[in-house]
Image (cartoon, rainbow over all chains, first blue to last red; front, side, top):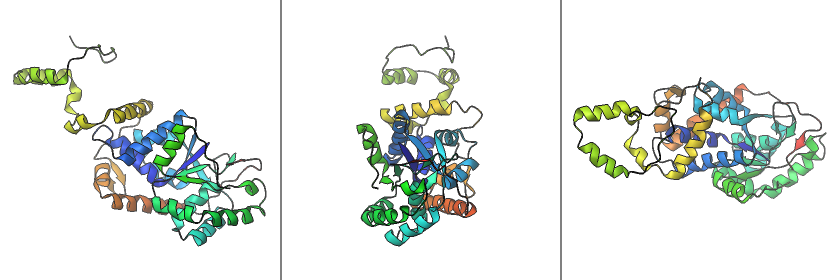
Length: 182
Length: 128
């Protein structure tokens, strides 16, 4: 199972590691750290976007950030990412950044190009989750129509499951591997 | 007798309130000696007493991972972090402002990385 961590998740992870010994953490900070641990213990592959990697690399001298970089692999856009971003934006009305992140979860790969997409995109952004879920049938239809014309491996592209840290943690603890919507 | 750093902690259970009552009877010299013998007392904040056990366990997990990176320093409040702010300044901002700056940094990063495209093997494993 593969999981892409949205930028806001990473911010809460860093805050959680920084404040963990200084004060009681917020439920969100606890939640993202618990998710991270649960994912590692269950062998889930964690990914961060190329943009997040770019930012975290500048902070790699800090042990907390280094731990994060050591635990997750970089996920970069592939061919058709821009096209699919545009279609997500048209369909959902989400901001370009959010659409690009959702598109990355489908049209993204690791540095060796051995995989296409992730199963789950974890985000703390509730409007993004709702915007996505509201238009999921339309997105499924549009992706099918687009994928059928694409060469391998892109014709097998799938939509990710979007989950908040709490939802994902519950799934991990129950041992349920989520199925992709497409 | 002082315990060496790598010596395992002895197993005993004296209620902390009992120790506190004892320490209150110490004079200044004895209290100073106590801080010398237990130097981590200087860095511990009183709020840490409110940290739930679950959080403590979670942090211990990540500290074990962090200890592998001895060449890296732990984050400190006055360290530079993002957009010219220190760690403490950044995390002291209201949540919305932190999110705005973090998102802005990502938007800039995406602009710098525009056109970067990862090639994919024809037999790449789809997420199905």
